[in-house]
Length: 157
Image 1 (tube, one colour):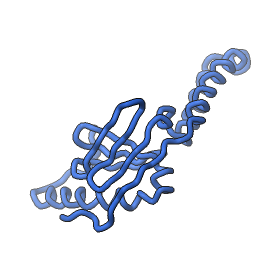
Image 2 (image 1 turned 90 degrees about the vertical axis):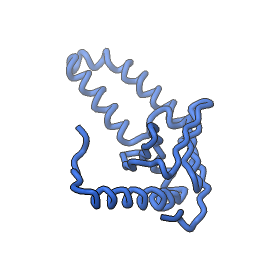
Image 3 (image 1 turned 135 degrees about the horizontal axis):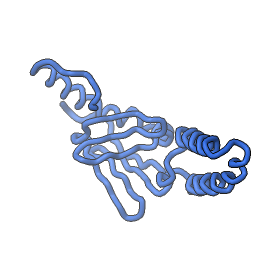
C-alpha cells in the first residue's frame, strides 16, 4: 500500500484567544447568576440551567485550551504544538482509530490522541488529505481481520 500521490504540508491555526476569554466569561457569568437564580428556580433548577447551558456551549464551541494549540500535517505525521512547549506527534501509520466529534476529528494510536479542529481542517482543505492517509490503512487492517476469521463489530464497553 503506497502513500497518497499528493504532497501534504498544512498548518491548522489555533482558534482565536477570544475563545478562552469567552469560556472564562461563561464561568464568571454562571457564578454571578447563581444567587439570583436560586431565589427564582431553586437549587436544582439553578444547577440544571447552568449545566444544560454549559453543555449547549460545549457542543457548539471548541474546548477552552484549543486556542493554545496549533496542528501541523505533513506526509509522514500529524503534530500538535501546544499548549506551551508541549509537542505530540502521531505518524499516519500508527493511527488506529479516526473518529469525528462535534468540533474535532480525533486520531488515536500508539498511546496518543490528537484532536484536529474540524472547522480549520475543512477550511484549510485538509479533510480529504487526512482521510486519504488514514482510511486505506484502516481498511487494509479490517480486510486482514476478516480474512483471519469472524470480526465482532461492537463498541468496547
